[in-house]
Length: 375
Image 1 (cartoon, rainbow, N blue to C red):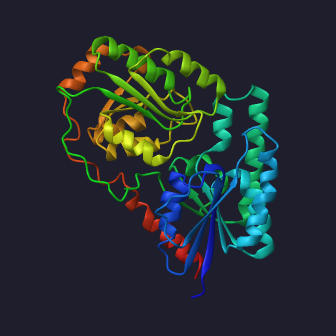
Image 2 (image 1 turned 90 degrees about the horizontal axis):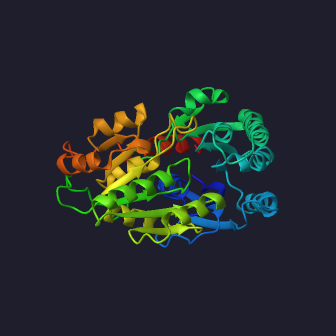
Image 3 (image 1 turned 135 degrees about the vertical axis):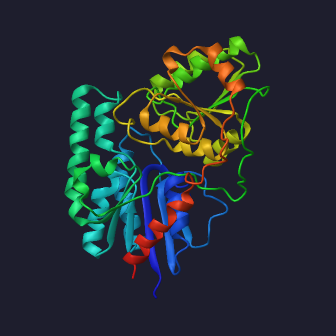
């Protein structure tokens, strides 16, 4: 069999992105006679990457700049240089350019749907009402126009199969379950905190929709009860107004530390903080765009045995209760003293670490799909 080149591309996600590189890229690299190319935003190249993976950190621009538009030309030049047989697009923003290449050179196009972008735009509060509607319409138009040329869709969430009507039956679901690191070991179970320090963790995107201000408020309340309480915030904040609020809310509080903020944080650093924390926070605000999705860090926190405090949502609550992984709470009206009592007295993960939270369960579906496409 001749060597097949497969390109994975995202405009804003870094080349070392958890899903694009660690999950999709590394898994595909296991297929014999393949050369995997990862194209994305500039970031450190993973030192331990397999020899058949090549990185192209060609994007480096301010998010609201002309560079975001001219990046399309850089991307097309890369496509012409690499000449991939399969292009896996991890964002709607590169769909049209990828479509142009695939049609002209008879390559196969795969769309990794990581978000319901149109619903996100309409439901979240990053733009004015009219701008939100126009942007959402634009995204939907691009996705629908590209659909006939897409060989297969990959869905990061089960709910997208119902929400996105253009998919037809050409999709597989690859949930964002935890990809074990080479040095990963299962945490000791059951987990209890009768006398351990309350080390809170908020990781990932720093945004108001994901409850960063609620996380800080909870840390404040717990600190008044227990001066050994700490909160670590690690991740990237893309909204300058939110970042200003976070800085104001944490000013002068030695028990709160921030890693990242205005700079991207390697996923390995986030994992390291999980290993050093005892409680993982998911204080998401109610929003249509996230109501039916399973947060990636829910899998990550369970994999590291963190006691989870998560917003009240039937889907999330069911998962947490099933695995005895934590508590579903109303962050806006929480009784801190009662919460501490529960955390100190209750045992968690009494049935061991869940087996169905790891990427190992998803990988075979991806390998089957790609192997069939390159035959």
